[in-house]
Image (cartoon, rainbow over all chains, first blue to last red):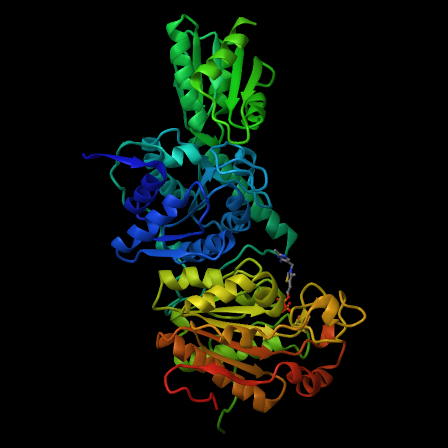
Length: 350
Length: 252
Ligand SMILES: Cc1ncc(C[n+]2csc(CCOP(=O)(O)OP(=O)(O)O)c2C)c(N)n1
Ligand code: SF4
């Protein structure tokens, strides 16, 4: 199969189209504009493909809501401040049990922040972000190849659970170029019975998030909660790297994990026994592997391009079973492997 | 004996939750009549709002997808672009369409999205208890304009139909009322025409309906109906605002 050199933002668009995405609405924001532009160019290539440059992120996600209910594989993308605006629609998608893929190429925040790569939206992504008792499946790619693969997977997961799925990348993953081989598109498995397309001769249906009766609303919340617990059991993904005989294990995701691998390779060459656990799904969080690793290893270091957000999930997973320290660079700073290696050595020698 | 009046087929046989004298229920009927007359029940998808009509899916016997407050036009756009051969309408109040959802409405209209908006203008936020809307008349009291709406403090009532009519993507807008038998018949024809235009692929259409809200206006239903003629139409004159569809004829 052909290997092509392509940027993360483009690959995300291409993988989406190959996965059968036929509706994209977005609003420009750096550093993910290339994705919106890619969709503008290439959606017209496929039959029934719709591209809309929406007037805002709020409009874009609500267009996705309509398109998803009408049966299209639908996607929108943005970066941090724009994702804040999309949260209304993500909550609505979750309430309505509608599939959709939302890409967030994170940048420095809070507020307008800057346009540099960051991981400051972990809380927002993994805690729901919008209002109400709901969950978003969150996938965190750490290479352009993985971005391609996870984008395709995201549509399948969204359909399988009828739930919004977020791809949580960052400005760097979006803009770097790497060789990619596309996986085979899989046929869509999504029952027509969920598609709202006019009732024909049959009974009319409605899809709504408003449930005024408290007991029925509670029932709906428990139904969603049961679905989330199935996802939490079945969909956890992670990678372990050189944890075999490690004395210290780094926990990092996305681009930070990439940097961590560089640091670990250097340190291993100089005899330091360090390894990495890389969560690929941020929700559901791979707590079990961290807990299991703590049986053998007493020292963890969480590394994030934030002031420490995933750190909380790691602590919850460890429940005090092991020491955990933190190294972070928020605000759009991308540390080098050498810088991280220094921080690791300090911790290692404690 | 000849039957001259009956429940439209596309209106579910359910009692409305609306207050006595409310214009929402009349407008629902008119939409269902239009759907029946055009024979489009099976291909119609409605988008109800947040607002007193939030439960509209309990009444319309067509497929419906609820939109978050104000986002009706964006949701309708998503549906229509995915299923271009369906008839898609959003149903929105003035708070929904002219405040929180102004941008979505304006841009769907400007893109000329081939959808129909039924815009209920009752000059207040009904559902949340009678607060000031963008359409509240000058001097009109509401729970958030207790001394009466003041142009300097609160701005002027927005004539959305006239504002949207200035956009090239808009093909047909008519302001109607549901306060008298004559106006009701006329509103019904306008709604049918808007749906017909959509079926013809003409572009964005909107029917504004001046709709009585006796509860929040603190009037009897009869007083509300009179108030529309005597006061409300001074700020919001009824009639065709724009019609560039085929023929360009009046809904009458
Ligand atoms: C995001 C959001 N903000 C506020 C509300 C509360 N809310 C519900 S309906 C409504 C206003 C309804 O007024 P209007 O659109 O004029 O419709 P009416 O009730 O008069 O028919 C508001 C503010 C909401 N549901 N969602
Ligand atoms: S509050 Fe007003 S708009 Fe709402 S149902 Fe009652 S009369 Fe109708």
